Image (cartoon, rainbow, N blue to C red):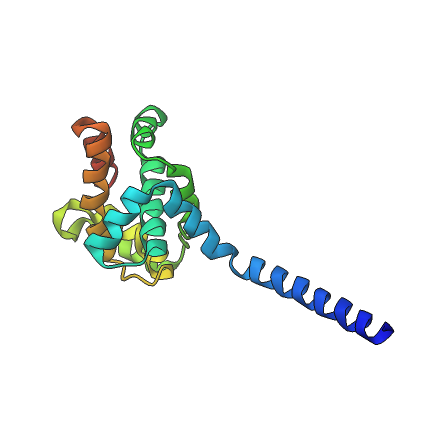
Length: 165
């Protein structure tokens, strides 16, 4: 009977350890899942319109909202934030932008990007980390801006659009 008890204890310990490993390994994807759960309508629109994964949609939207937050005054950003459920979760799901010489070299070319979206050059790092080409940031903008406009009105959409110019 004693051998069976030790085998049982070993099995339970092994299962517990395995559960911990799975929990910590899935922590990053859980963060993306939280973001898509916080704003499922926007994430759904992005995944459908751009043929990307929910994690890419939430991370990319979060990167754009983070850029807007850094460029808009707090009162204007609060109007945008009021239009997007779970905006903080989206921002937290975005990969951090890395500062390097390549990004600073690209910023000089920002004014030559068609459509006045040259400021999106700063999104190259986060979008690459999401497995998306940097130019995909420009494809996110109309979807995100239209979503914000549908929730907060044309004026709020214009505020957000202005942050990307």
